[in-house]
Length: 210
Image 1: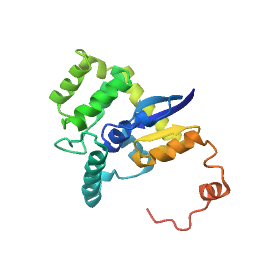
Image 2: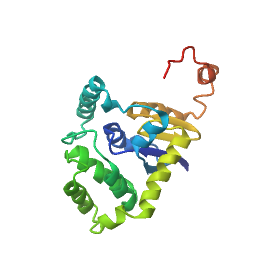
Image 3: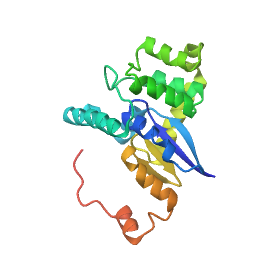
Image 4: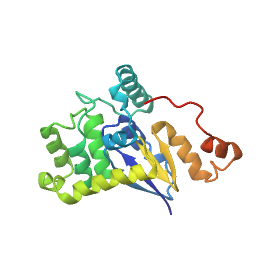
């Protein structure tokens, strides 16, 4: 059985769109679902999120909706974005995480357009998961530690954004890398050609000042 990790944050509609494509993955692949804090990745690598750049924000929001409509995936942006995903991430960890819980939370946010960091919305998502005691569970030290360790593991694997598949030391970032990941699963030597090796080790020609 092949094994890969999928690092994601509910803050990313790209993660929602890619998760909706999991049926395309081969049956002999086991995927570990790893909720991470995207803000932790951004801080580590010194990046801005796509929604923090005004014109990029408009583009990606339209791109999300366009992609979802083309694929027949229900998509309603919550009232405000970016949002604080912390409680939803902890809820997913407390619930498993498994495909059912991840799907339930994603659909709650982007399928129905609920605001993820509203306390009433968090409670509604927990109810859909049958978690009456969610407040105590998402506040537990174990859940908090798991989210922290997942984020650290993503960074150690080289993940710089979400969603990211990680397998055999290779990272595949974003929904639009899904086909690349599927090709790699079929042909693990994908990155071993002379040109792939060359561009993977070539020096930077110009470095901008910080």
